[in-house]
Length: 190
Image 1 (cartoon, rainbow, N blue to C red):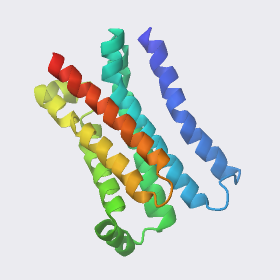
Image 2: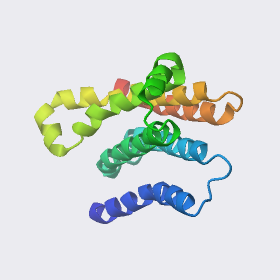
Image 3: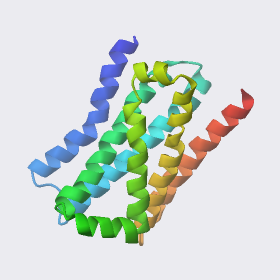
C-alpha cells in the first residue's frame, strides 16, 4: 500500500512548484514578482518543515509507521523549497552579486539565520538515504536532530523578516514550538 501512497505524496509535494512555475510563465506574480517567488518558496519551506516534524507525533497517535516512511521524502522537499528560496535571492534578486550577498549575510540577522538554516540542511540531505542510515547507525539519529534547530531558525528568519505583519510568522513559530514540544513529551515517555 505504501508504494502507491509515496508517489501520490511526491506529486502532491510538487504542486507548489508547479503553481509557482505556472505563475512565472504566465506572468501572474503581481507587481513584485521576485518578492512573490521569494515569499512563496520560503513559506512552502516552512510548511514542509512543519509536515516533517509532524510525522513522529502522527506515528505515535495513529500507531502506524506509514508517517515515518514518508518523513524522509518530506524532509527532502524542505531542502528543495529552501534551495529554490535561496536561489531566488541569489540569482534573481541579487544576480550573483557576491559582495552584496556577503554583506547581507553579515549585516542582516534574518538573512544570516536563514542562510545558516540552509547550510544545516546539507548534511541531512547527504545522509538521507537508507544506506547512510545503516552506515551512521545511532549517529544518524543524532545528526538528523539538526532539523529542530533548522525549524527554529526558519521561523526566526520569517519573524525577523516581517516588518509589519507578524500574524503569519508567529503562527508558524507556534506550530513549530508545539510540534517540538510533542517530540520532547514523547522522548520522556519512552
